Image 1 (cartoon, protein in one colour):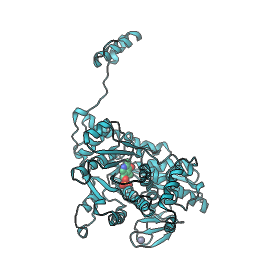
Image 2: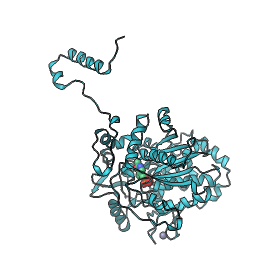
Image 3: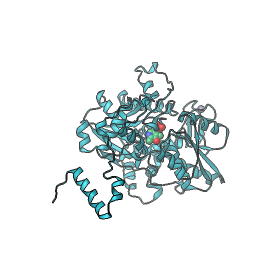
Image 4: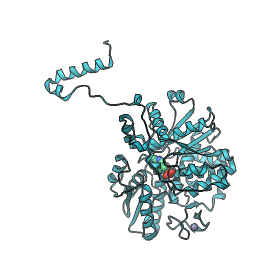
Amino acid sequence: MEYFCLGCGKRFPADELYYTCPDCGGVFLLENLDFDKLKETSGEEWRKIFDDRAATKNTALRGIFRFYELMAPVLEEKDIVYLGEGNTPIIESSENLGRATRMATAYKNDGQNPSASFKDRGMACAFSYLRSLVRANDWDQILTVCASTGDTSAAAALYASYIGGPIKSVVILPHGKVTPAQLSQPLGSGATVLEVPGVFDDCMKVVEHLADNYRVALLNSKNSWRILGQESYAFEIAQWFDWNMENKNIFVPIGNAGNITAIMAGFLKLYELEIIDELPRMFGVQSHHADPVYRYYSVEDAQQRAYKPVIVTPSVAQAAMIGNPVSFPRVKHFAEKYEAIAGEDAFHVIQVTEQQIMDSMIQANRNGHIACTQGGESFAGAKRARELGLVASDELCILDSTAHHLKFVDFQSMYFENTFPAEFEVAPDQSLANKPELIISPDEKEKLSPEEYTRATADKVVAKLGLQGK
Ligand SMILES: *Cc1c(COP(=O)(O)O)cnc(C)c1O
Ligand SMILES: [Zn+2]
């Protein structure tokens, strides 16, 4: 395999750890030089190989490396780390939800990964690679560093602490800008947690300075090994639908744009190997508070488009609140390929409001789903795409809930308690507010014997619910 620089086009061998191009600072893609050899195996044979492998008990090939040949076939099985990542479920929208939206939607719950976000896919690949490097070079210590909106550090810290030994993890977070659950994860995994005042983009600059000047393994999504692992999301969707991508639309929130890059790259590989015979349509979704990719593509004439970072304002889709996405050149690269094969209609970037994101998350979860705020963003994007006439009502929209709902419950609390700071521009629908109710006061409890207390409490529950005796 080789690193291929999207900036200057130079190539570098993959047996060395590169974060960005040493010549021009551009981002890399990892390319399998033997990819064309894979074409000697037919699409049908590949489908059978991957379907058979779904039953394996070999842990190295159970997770994202079920698709080993499509990802990093240079890694040896003994280096592959498996913590149960990948193969996350695809859950059709509940009947009630489908009735409300009059759309066919399904959530792929990437929050059901070990550290509760899709970041585990990329980390499993990056750490497997690191482990191979440690072995090959006999390193006695390697420090992994990442800046994070929360989930990257949770994933990096988990994998680092599992492997242990020479691999140690340091994470750099924007002070006060990650949820308590996200902060507790790297702390619990024993990582060194350093906080910086500012937002994610500030942390990123610090980390890049470290990468330029010191010997550290940077695990941000500029790291092309992570992108490779995240391609598994696309492979799993294709396999789940028996490799039939007809009338399928994929909705993905865009932050640093690594995930949408990987998903497009993944589907393109499947298409090139004739494992699928049609590309699903791709929709990136951004909040109006952090929408540089949307702004770029909102200019119709491709010649007139100019990329400009934006200054972000607070977003409930906090993990995607990024004004200068590092993988933008990758998105451009794959979007062009995608459109060349499947037409201009095959790739869109949709903008949604903070209000729509919150309303959509609350609506999904009241109907049996476990969407995080970014999952709300995917859902809001699908509704918006329908409104714009970009998807038909009978086409399936597959929504990425990139993390578990539980990581982002603070935003749910703000919604229910109507405590959003004005900058969020979210006015909760108060009819949806759900709050716990204290049914009997501690003072009352004091005055009662244990039996009386049980009886009095039960009576209050009966009165409250209007229960009938049997
Ligand atoms: C990282 C992250 C995103 C953004 O993904 P990118 O690859 O940066 O575009 C979205 N949602 C969650 C939960 C994340 O952790
Ligand atoms: Zn370069």
